[in-house]
Image (cartoon, rainbow over all chains, first blue to last red; front, side, top):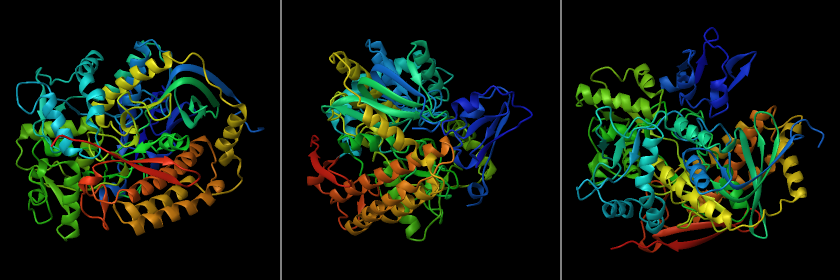
Length: 66
Length: 563
């Protein structure tokens, strides 16, 4: 379960990495990366703060399968 | 210390330090600042998006004096007395909620978040045992960032990404705290005249439905950090024996309960039959604990799975429902669509959520025991929001958070000078905090935490007895030997190590408190199989306090309600 960041759309503004309440998003080489995907709460804060539509959500097989 | 981490030490002073910058904490900071105090907020995440309403919130409980007999202060207090009987102290409730309600609603609107619908009307729905529709539906998606903006406008100092690791007293009064930056490893030593604890509850304490401990109804960053630290300095906790659960969509522990049933959804079992009238006269509008109890009984009787049936709702109401669900949890509507639940004629499968250490009702809290001024038993330490024993939910965190800020500022103004923080204690704390980074090999935080979750879930998640609780305490104590083996490879993992230890510590406290309540109340939140009945002489608070290493003292404080 996790937020997914489109590297092509990310402009490196850092807002998602700055605000992520679970500390799962970090900056790597100027691009936001979901470093701890298993710890995502799916709160959607990062997507709301992204001005470039770079963030989507993927639901894990367990979430969709049970 | 020769390590890189912790070598940079930041020292700060404030009249009032607010620990936790969620809903309650930000209201506390605003109130204390307006009262003239110099305030510092310390948040483990970032105040822009931290806490329970990071991604949004969709309802606010209030009575509005519209002329309806259920819509008055007295009627509301009658509801609190009925639904939170034995956990809510009405005198405190009046002070931290009723007295603050009107200015709180004005504050929300002033911050730029409307409690009204686009047509200018207030839309209210009824659920959770309410005698009338107390839940104002509103678009609170931006409430948290807007409040953070209010804090910035007042130039309130804020330290983000700092996990508070311990509190310190001097001659029995609050002196300050220590913490560390989870992003850069700097160490913080903060002296303050007063502290307000506003760090929520302990949400990763039990197994979750998918097995992922971060797939939770409430914020997984809330790990009892300050419940543990407060307890360690002699602060009394109350209402911590309760293990809170709710009803969530199968696969995704997200809010939605209030929207589903407030909008008229029907709770049905696997046979397609509504069942809640068998458990409570209010049926699907019953208090939350009874909805959970009903669901557990149906599943246990082989009539699962459980569903919410919304097929009878009009297209307009269904549209509003999915809109509300997305306001409360940004990603929930697309999850429901991914599961095919937006198709006509489909029942939405629900389940009982993970248990958590939290309040037994929306009308009280679970944690630091507070009085009418939000003060704990330790001079200088206050509590607000979910972290206190008397506040919970958005309405009380907004209103009571503000009350706590006023009282903390008033107290700080009476303190002439800062108390001592002892250098030796801070040095020891710095070594303790960063120790998991120094180990070459060891146990991962997740593994340790998983063991805690297995024990808690097996022994009191939620059903419990003297045997199960005593056994849980033995097992949780035996885990202490692995604490010195916890290994972190980076600062993020270091934070998880401390969270894991805090969850374990709070789990022990919860088990001790549950042992002391020899009855059942708010079933299944406190269901003792050896004491299955609710007893009138147990109507009150189990208050717990540290009594030596791994020992907990308990006392009972009776709560009075009008007949």
